[in-house]
Length: 219
Image 1: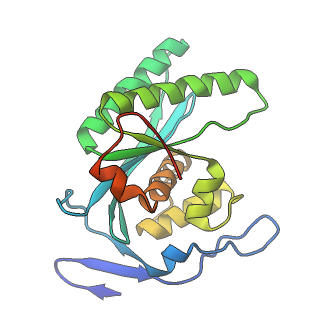
Image 2: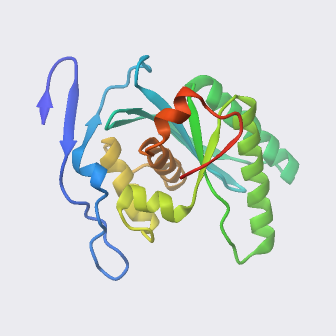
């Protein structure tokens, strides 16, 4: 670890300790072998540094997280969980839209990524989740942000190297990759993982130069 008065940077080169349910060690993504953690909390600087908003939509709790990407360096800007407490679905969706729009205005991300639709056993839960996801997409669109989609397996593979990693593994790896002192809460961790996944996408720079004004399919 190298420390100075202006910058603290630690480069993580160790193998991920997350293990699969069978006990096998989760494979570390190749890019993480050259990954550095920057602990500074300054604002975005022009020329290469990009803020990515990750969204993990939910019918009651929606996680969000903004990650700064500069080369191989990732840094958490902010994150949290929007908990809808309205008595009706319409009220909860309105709260989600309002708070997410406020977060976008305050944090000024330059692109966004969201978890894609996945199959669910409970049809009603899937429909309600779809409403929340639609509100999140519309809010991003209103702010001029393109929103890339990633499946849960894609996100888990990008962050842990194992597409079936459990929540605790994702939380620990997000903590490691962002240099946090403790794992973030579950919903926020999922959102930060989505942002990390998009941030390391090979096509990110092209999307930032000419961001889409709508839904962008992930590679």
